[in-house]
Length: 395
Image (cartoon, rainbow, N blue to C red):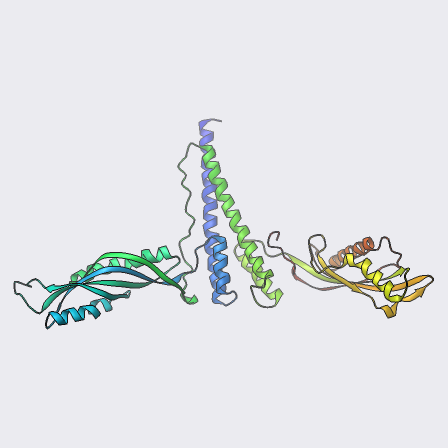
């Protein structure tokens, strides 16, 4: 491979890497926005929305934080005497602090010093005092994480310092203590437009094919993982009844949610029920014993847990009074009913035919060692829609 060929291959890899990253960012933004829209429309609950965002590694919902800091407040005020100055210093703060926007609260803790103020314009005034107080500063910010809340609070306070200084007020020695909360932000106030958290890969190894290939593979895998994660979590919410409502309308909304994100919709299926009637010839004592033997024989085809091998629920029964004597045994009529959702069939007739084959094969295996009459099947298509039995790991 020539140097020119190598450079071209690396450029191609870089292009593919950038494309995968941009697709990840676009999908992340669209998924987060769609989730918040569903939350606003009360289609999902807040904990479910927060869990989905965390599962997908996306920017979480913002919260309201109360952020506190210790500081030293110093200002000059006029008082009648030193006693009044000290008393007011314990409880009061300058009015300028109360008028700040964004709001900031200042709570005095203890008085550090109260001294006569320097002369103003060369004219001393014995009623003016410089007051220095240890205070707690609080402000309120909306942020997605505590660290972001602390940075935003510091920016608010620092932004106020020049205006306070112009008014003769200083805040020094700020020591941020942490953020209390968080409290939920009203859903309508949540901004869906946030910077994506996935950054651009630094493609600095322009002459390293291995590094360029690894960067491309990582970006492609991240994109695939996000797609799988979104799909799996959406299906999990559906099958675990996190999303309320009748199944089919709810499933259709979930399918549309996926389709709007450019992902495949949920698999569709025909809902088919099949009733199978068969009479078993059993040698036994009383009729109740013969019916018990029939139940043991058909137990192997009874299931309430559909899986890939047996995509149905099935159960059966007989009534001892219906058993009739047959030479040295009994003829025991049995009905077995199947309820299944079958995928991949274009028409109801195709689904019906496939269901009959599945049921006949299932019962034939179960009755291989039992003499019985031919099996009679009655199949009905109950409808079609999103498959009732979804697997988040496979679908």
